[in-house]
Length: 154
Image (cartoon, rainbow, N blue to C red; front, side, top):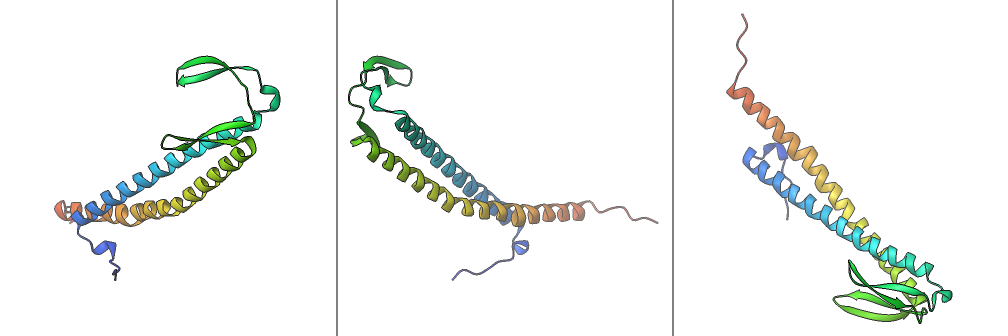
């Protein structure tokens, strides 16, 4: 069973270790949220593209990306079916309506994941700021005062 420890009672060196650990954890959680937002944005952009796709786009010229900076000309044929990247190199053919549902579900899932991570990030950040950094600064100031006492006034 975990036992509560008063942060003010922790030696300076251990406080520094705790601060570094909390810093690493907040960086990890922040990076995780940023990555989830990036993926969420990708799905939202795909969702928007699907919303713009209509039957009258059939037969229109398009540029097909081969890489992020290289394209080949093409023609849109069947606009009722799309290929979805479902991850790890797998693609699934779906109808436009099914694809919209897929992207909506993915965006909602990622939103929920970010909502789960956010409180943990806030807690780690608050703990680092309020407890560790504040106590660490107090101890450093106290040590400085002990090492350089003010001259006595007569």
